[in-house]
Length: 202
Image 1 (cartoon, helix red, strand yellow):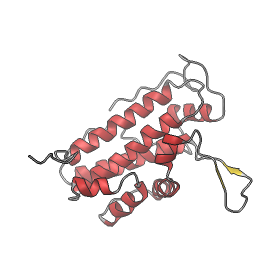
Image 2: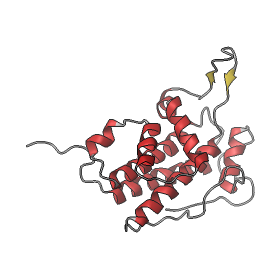
Image 3: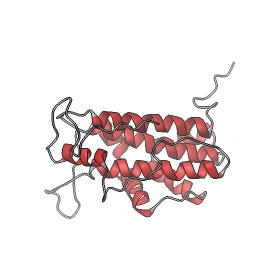
Image 4: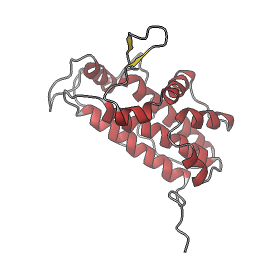
């Protein structure tokens, strides 16, 4: 008997729900983060959520499991294909996802302790990674775009985060990301800047 390929039974709805689970886990880890060596565990969850949302959209448009696996973790290529199939994603988020894919962030956060690299113009000057808050906002935008596409196709999905996140006008969670990035994060059990801890459930 031939073993069915991984993901053979997954529907667009199932993949979307899985992506929400990764995103929700990312929020929980960020909210409970303490001073730590690296923020890559948080980044990995949000990056995988973006990848999985894009897989849900491609599956919605007929991509088979073998085709989806062929993308590996290349979110830039996934997004480029999704846009040819009609995905409407705000330019700011699209630019972030494309840049993340070109930089290979998904693989780098698994094996490197930070995302600083050497620029081509100034090889001795390290470049700063994109703030975690921008990754959180990009994940939010990708989820919203795929959610709307699924609803447009007649698939009703629940989304506990209907209001989009804007990294330029951050809510409590994004402010908390910023405190972790600039070294002002507090110890275990502390509350985010701005008041009570935000718990967003899917």
